Length: 399
Image (cartoon, rainbow, N blue to C red; front, side, top):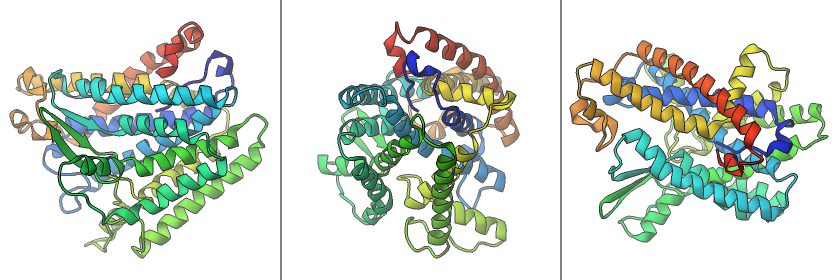
């Protein structure tokens, strides 16, 4: 997720950035459709190599690219937003939008995912992580840019050194450590906070994205930018392969040779997302940077449509979750379940009343394609509305 510049800057939006963001928005929806529609998702993890299929594994794996790209481009867009503003203005915007994203995660997204206003579990996931990272960046931007870059590299490269550190119990210290590095659930009275996106590596990624924004300043040489992006992306992929091949460093989940070469490859690619390991970040952001390098070409009929999704990411995110859950409710009723079974009181996969619910991957893909096509006219309408009214309605910058 990221934010848009005001109307005066609209004509200078970076199409390659919107295109990459749009592509991962489309891919992201596949994972969420899978969660609500796949029968296998109620039985086991799609990355469990003892039970998964190749197609199911890659259906999940390809969506690994989404969150790191969202956070990286949030940092890049922050830099571009600040070009025509002073640091105080940029800091205030990052702070307030970060707060809005946290609140949206806790209250709007939770309601859309559960359809239950009394749901007691707050899933602190990607929108929450982006929000807190923006809040952190609102202070970090006052640092020297080289120091910001160094901070990002250290947080990404060194946070796996903390994997062996654990703070047991349910106290404030345990909660804060979980927020920083170790995914856990905490119950305080009626409410449970499920921390799935610890912050240290995500703050590192948004710092790197912020520094990346300097490549897109007006007048920057396009040839040099492409060369830099290719070098950075290629280096990230190379480092991933080297570190992963020897299980040297960067992921606590080591790969191993499996019964056949295909599953050995799956094991090699099966890196840790919660929190995102160094290898996970290298594996996802390396190709993303290469994509950016080659995306600076005139849009065609397809990429022009993909870009539309990338121009309104928060609108897309909120609408797509509501539609997925609504369609899943309808699918459950058609399958013989009660509509109330889709009003969640626990995690979807743990809902006893939905035992036996779900569809094969072909149906999942059909539902995903239908959702993306349905979202296109909605996103196109909102993009047009946003560009037309942003000067008179500044709150649109938060969507």
